[in-house]
Image: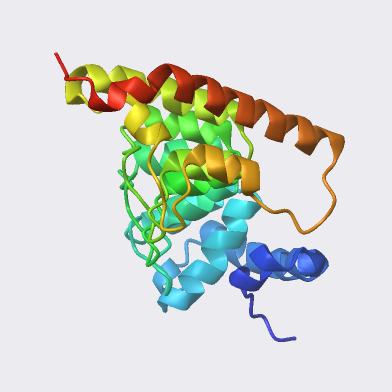
Length: 242
């Protein structure tokens, strides 16, 4: 049996879930044997690729104790070949307990970027992970950071049709504006490289399969919310900060 796991493929091809479960059973056994036998992890996870092969399935399976042990033996901000860190995977897979562990115990950089300049906050917003978004905001995630497509966290939340996340971001930005002078309007009107505001993204974001009723309601709610705050905040773009 070839014990190799392509976590990139897993993220893009859900049909290989069974393969993941079989492979994960093998890796988990090896990891647990190492823990209880007090075998140095350096003898088992000698290469960076082996670290990621073990870490990502542990995050997806929400194996907090194993993630804790793995990260202890490595720098939490170590990137994979695409610039993703442990916190990116944890945020995108909606694991709030592990997010808290990485930030509070291991001091993970909440604003670290991938090669496409995506932050953990972008990942959480894009995947509709409201609990993770709240944790990241609490630990000073930068809502103004943009991806390589010049998309903000609000663009990502709009693409996910997540009104709860947009509400959380808006509240956070409103609090920040008292100190920075950067208004909510500047985020609402921010355009990406496709010249789209978050509202444009919510209106035009394409799904390859027919929408469910729940998705249609989510899109309508998202558009209504962004339209509402856009109408109330548009004038703030040119309003002097006091």
